[in-house]
Length: 437
Image 1 (cartoon, rainbow, N blue to C red):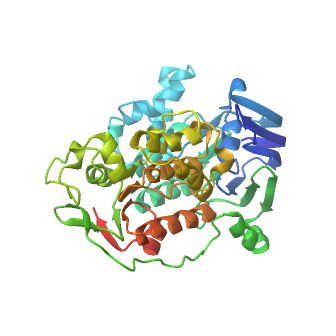
Image 2: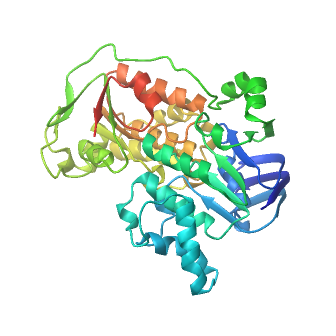
Image 3: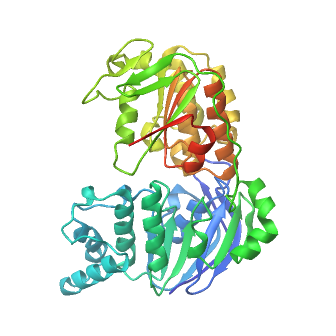
């Protein structure tokens, strides 16, 4: 097991004025299970990266100390596909042991033990590409524990998963019998509380805001945490439904999205939600049927400059659509190429709480900040239709509500909105109808 201690810890990414995290004094004892909370941008992922030794000296500036007394550290990230490196399940779990030079006759018994520990339902030869999102994340956890780490770090391990996959991962974590300290980051608190015995809340740039048992932290600081953007249990949302529906903007077979309407495409991981979104957005050619729009059929044939002013798309992985080195430049790129006024840039920076990050490199933003930037880039060309793939991914309560209000406002202004999402709260709050796959 590992004892973790941070003494005045802080980290500032290279080229940034503001610290990603600062003045953190924290001690976590052997075997504790800790839920790490905080608003978007509070530094949760940065702190985990520091504990995992993933912050290179030349990538920023560190203050204070990080002390870990114990064995290896294992980490599991938000997206399991970024961690799976081999084609077969057994080989993927064995990868870490092979890199450490573990004797071959010890590797496979340890691989089987790790797979059994996470309840992996298939054999060693199972293709990693044939697994559902929840199964992939279960495999990633097996790869993290196979080295018998003293510290296990889980950075939003259910963020990209459908409800069934998320439940699968939470059941896996609950069932782990490890001689290890565990630190878990999750935005949605309720499902994570049964997995932990302690809650630590970070305040952006101000160290630890709250620390104690879940019952004590939420009873004492519940309102303060909600105001700071933390997803407290049993939070309620006021529904915002369409008031005026216009003509059809995009359609395909049994789908028709009208101006002033928000459609939610839902379904399990691997059901084809993102594929459908890409087709409706004119980014790929349909393999069957035909996409019709108010401006003509087959948007995949339109020039990019024309498509960007008619249909805006936000990808599931926001970093896949960043092409510049500064947030402001990223937002200005679309308007410059399509002849739109650049005045929209400052308005979007303010609206989506990105103004303090205008000069930052998009790839140094937190996951929630990157998601808001990707939404802003789609809005910058003022398209009539918006295709948003997991738009609320990684958001704290405050920014989630702001994004929901923005989506509802855009719909009420007459935009047609398509939401690909696992977020049941988003569907209930703003979607006018649901298309399940």
